[in-house]
Amino acid sequence: MDGEYEAIRKAVTAAVEELLAVAGVRAGQVLIVGCSTSEVLGRRIGSSGSNEVAAAIMIALKDVCARCGVDLAIQCCEHLNRALVVERRVMERYHLEEVSVVPVLGAGGALAAKAMRDLSDPVVVERIQAHVGLDIGATLIGMHLKPVVVPVRLKQIFIGQAQVTAARTRPKLVGGIRAVYELPSCQ
Image 1 (spheres, rainbow, N blue to C red):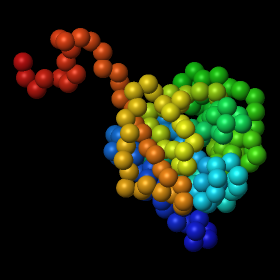
Image 2 (image 1 turned 180 degrees about the vertical axis):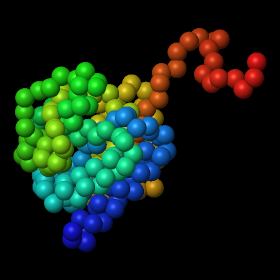
Image 3 (image 1 turned 180 degrees about the horizontal axis):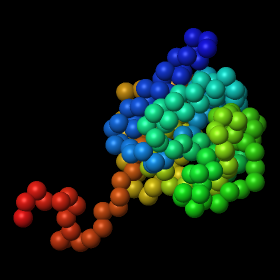
Image 4 (image 1 turned 90 degrees about the vertical axis):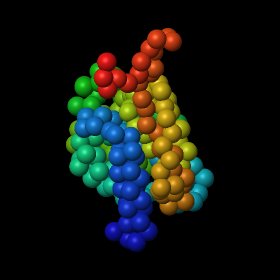
């Protein structure tokens, strides 16, 4: 792997490992990743998709997710209404609905197109409620996160030239003035 792509792979690995650790992600939870490979290259989003950048990013994502037992959802671009590429088993576990489309470089994005080729049994779904998310290049992943989103400030703030935004989710706090949100140590 070329030095530039190796640096991208390492940056993605560091960002995902930190996010999963900070967020306390457990095996079987879902990480959503939105990515503009154009932005990683320092170009305007949607203008210069790169299969090589997508390959470097996908290597890192698959490696970290496999080691941690985390499921991966790759967001397509706006031309596919930000649909997601996931493994069929994820679709079935979360009772998601499959849609008929194949992401390609010009409609779906380089990373989603790469995911369609690299995942073992990929399908495309319209929506998911992921537990954590990594947004590389301002692709706007918020619509696919659980309702209460908490920003995570990572040490890795850029991947290539693209700004990185990370988030975790937490359960909603429900109740009134008598509600307790942590189990008391003694009673």
